[in-house]
Length: 282
Image (tube, rainbow, N blue to C red; front, side, top):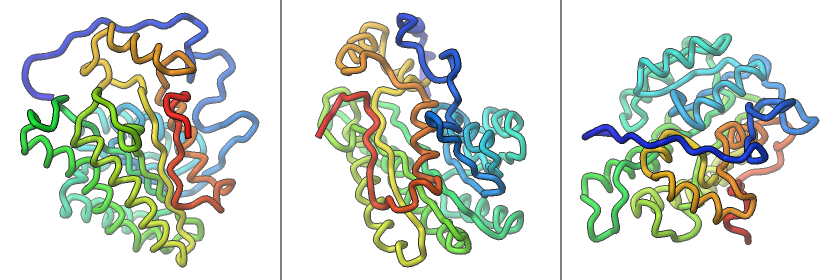
């Protein structure tokens, strides 16, 4: 984010609200209950993997035995994540650039000749304003990162995924793309709705190749972006609006991403899995 630094006090929850890797005995995102996901020797790409959900997902796949490619525009943070995961490799990649995406796919092709799993996670927004007040350049920037990037990644990754016996694409959507809220960006909400729709289109197109395409739609995940965009009072109000009474941890989202990429989810495709603590129920 550009401009003056935003400093916010960290939010703390009661001990009963702590979760993910902080909870004693938690298995980590590479496991879900008694199910331990195995991705031995699978080749996995996670975009936007230098922080937040992407970072947690990359770590989870690495712990489950995968060869993980950490893609991000943040070379410093991305390199650190890559170094933390056994067998991982960081690739600087601007997912809004066809040339940058093509270079990343060429590297993976040279290294492994196949891609088993693509996680389109890169996303976000920078300005929270109404439609009337939103600058056009912000609209385009958010669309490029959240929706157009999913198209570019899928378009260039599919030839590699078609070489896999069990190809998977998992897109990270959002509750913002499913229901209207004044506490979001109109560009972000529209882009994520597009991600959910593109997920269904890709699932239809790629079914004959045995490739499943699904999405997760989280809400109120405790990430750096939330800390920048919401003050403590707003964060507490949001937590109180969620039936489960707390924010979601990045590791919890990662667990569902791994499930959708797993053999166990092989008959699910074209679905958007709502993981929002009951904030929206259908």
